[in-house]
Length: 393
Image 1 (cartoon, rainbow, N blue to C red):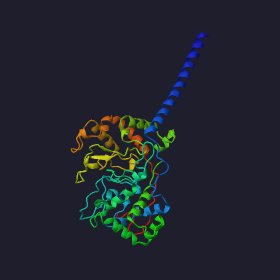
Image 2 (cartoon, rainbow, N blue to C red):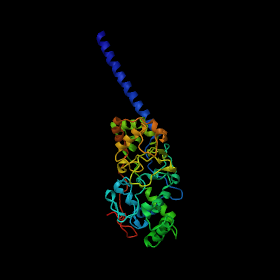
Image 3 (cartoon, rainbow, N blue to C red):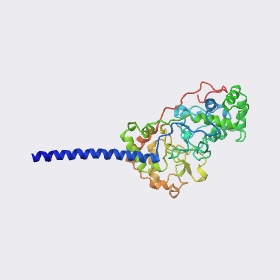
Image 4 (cartoon, helix red, strand yellow):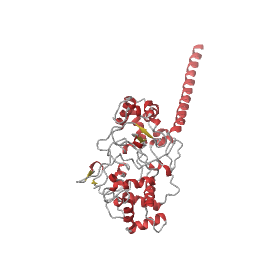
């Protein structure tokens, strides 16, 4: 009898132990999830707009037509969408873009002959989720002061929208100067009855076609290009099954090895500039020294990486594995750019502790940040009557 009592007591202790272990495990997971929300969260379901540029259906519809219309370029041969196409996630699969005086789309795009236009200086950011640029760990942001471009030379979508039009190698070309291109574009738009009507409806003004309203309309459309329901977003909103166990492990490693020092917040970017010493792209004849000639560049978002290869500010790396191998090298003070000695690397680099065996799990996690549910509808025509998207066929 005593032997049976001991046996029963032994099994009772095992059951209690496993029961307690499960509760501790659940608590640990819960605490871990709670800790994650300090640095990470799902993207907001809605988008903010500036006080002086509230979203309206008319403004968004106008902005979309302008985004696809090559009339905004000096030679009327390239549109915003040429390098930011919905079929490639509003980015493109080129290391650096080919702007005006060219034809074709994506990997088939090439300069016309003869040509004196250089390659676009940097890799094309995706327009997806730029409505959230500047968002912090507190999920707050100011759309009027949102950092744009790799060197943060613009501070809102309204300011960003006009800069490619003014840039020689992007949309302007040689026919106009930086000072004369926007007045020329405004003049062209005023000559088109449909645009006169669309601008009047969008801005409720008689003489509504101006460079300021041009930027506001394009920005309004760009704020609709949101992909905020990735599997990671679903996971952070409470769906534990939205991510696989291996992806959750990759998320833990992502934080442990130091990636989260710069890639944090809902957009996985601190929106600050950092010196990394990325190797130069030999297509770019002039050395790109970044922000204030410091060789620093803004931290890009890690969302929708499936659409943004090649990676880094000049498209130096074809795959995420190459990017992670680069970080491993520079954390060990390996020089990859002769213009940037290791002592100039960002201090966060010293905190990276990345090994090859961890890379596959981290990449697995990064794939949970992809979201393909966004506006892919292309207008059948634009008011100028020019080819939609420019000379891309």
